[in-house]
Each structure stands twice: as structure tokens, then as C-alpha cells.
Image 1: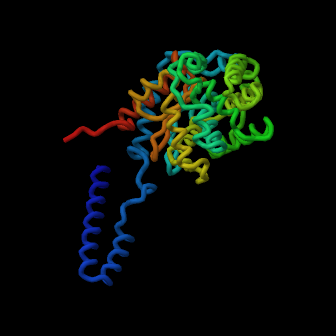
Image 2: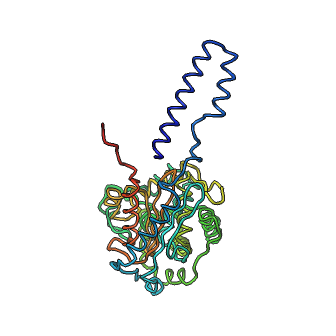
Image 3: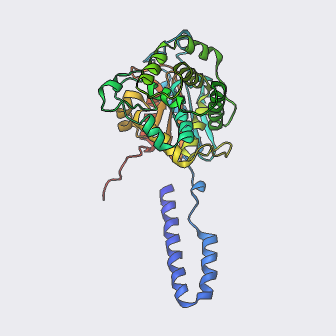
Length: 367
């Protein structure tokens, strides 16, 4: 019915324009009045006035509840275990949230439970680096090359024609973080935190025990940083770059926060909650583009094929996916598959994509 209504409004607008042209040919004075009146009364609806959701709020709420009930019993996968704090996450935690470009938030389950961003910070670190350095400089310094390898792997650096990385995998994210401006590590941390807060629309903060645990088990990150430095692809001292990166990874958010952060990207860089422009539309587009290339690590190809939305996951169990100009879906569930992606989040977002026909590359069948 919504499609029919939009089509009817479009036909009505076309008729009014045609009538106005005819009047112009007959009476220039009258035509000016008619054009003004028709523009005021019958202009096509502004994008901001068109409902961003694919169904009514009540129907969306019902659907999220159905999916929460459907998948909460799925116990495949395991929580991350790279340190004791990560391993202590509740494997049964499960929250779903949707935030629209007009600022509405609809959620179910553990959507207000705080968890660390971890790799979910990567698209936002990339956004700040783009803001500081520009797109061409980031393509030259870091690259946006799909790796085809697990998120922590350095293998791609040795086997591809280029040693440049991808902002959505660990080595690339450390390189990205090293380009963020600031006179010292404290200023860089503060700028990054403020940037994340602008996306979330509230004062999110690092979780101290997460940061301490990550820094205590940071040998893998330091190894990546030193390899990058060896190839002249790191733009800060290795330990400082890793500290800055892991500090951002430790910032705590909820599924509702993550949905708002995603909706800011869906809204072309304007936070729908605060109405603040956080990044330009061009930078938001670049963040989404990078997410498509490797946001779900080496499962990004199957994800694009099945779900068809820019998305990013984190080993804490969060995943968010973007419907440009519409809304963002965020899911928190710590059980991970072999790729490091939340099992339940994949099922929820895939179901919504199929149910609401969200795949961005879907082509209407020819008549």
C-alpha cells in the first residue's frame, strides 16, 4: 500500500507540472501564481518526511520480538577468549536495536547492556582519519584492499601485489589510528573519544578493565605494528599506535548506542539524535564502502551475497548493519562463529534483510 501511495503522489505531481506548463503558454501572469501555489501545496514529499522504516513501528517491534524469541535459544559458537575479561562475557546476552535517520530507536532484549566496541571501533577510527587526512592520503597510506584472511592475519601483506592494508582488519586499523592527528597520545585519545561520543550522541567512555586486559595481552597488536613500521606503513611510534587503538576498542556502548552510531552513517554523517553533523556525506560514504570490503572479515563475501548491507562486527559480540537513508540494525550477542562474527547477529540481520527486502544490490525482475 505504501508503494501505491507513493506512486499516486508521483503521478499527481507530474500532472500538476504539465498543467502549469500549459498555463505558462497561455497567461504568463497567471502561470506564476499557479506555479507558486502548486509548489507549496503539492510538492513531492521531502525525503525526511518519508517513513524510514519498511513497516509500522508496531510491526517492527513485533518482528524484533519474534526474532529475539526465535534465535535466543541458538547456542552455537563461543565467546572470545583472548583474555580473561573477554572470556567472562555472558554467552546468553542478546539484544537487538534499530535506529532510524529520524531519530527513533526500537529495541528488545539486552539492548541497554554495555559491552566494549573492540573492532566495531574500526569504521569510526577510519572516519576520523579521513577527516584529518583526506581520502586520497588514506588510500595512499593505508589502502582499502580486501584481505581474504582472518582479521588478525599479516599474511595478506606478504602474498598480495601491494602491502597496503584494509581499515577493517587489525593491521589496517592500527595503521589508520597512527594517522590520527594530535600533539601527544593524550590529545589523540581525547579526540578519538570525542568523535565516538559524537557518533553515539552521548558520553560513552572506555571500560578500564577491558583496556587494562587488552594492553596486558597486546603482543599480537605490537607485532603487527612493528611489521607495519618495517614497511614504512605506520605513522606513529608502534607502542603509542597500539595504545591509542586499544583505548578506542575498550570504549563501552550498548546495542542502542551502536544503532545510533550506524544511523549517523545511514544519515550521511548527521547524528539523528543530536542533529550534529559528525562527518561529511563523502566521509560517511567512504566508511560504508570500507565496511563492505572487509567489515565481516573473511566472511565479508558471503555476507554481501546473503545480506547485502554494509556491516561491521567485533569480537565482543556486536554487529551493526546500515540501510543508507533509512536505518541501522545493531545486535549484541557474544557467541562467535569461526570468522569472529556473532552467530545470532548474523541470523537476525539476514532474516531482516530477507523479510524486508533490504539487499542493496537487489534488481527488480524485468516485466
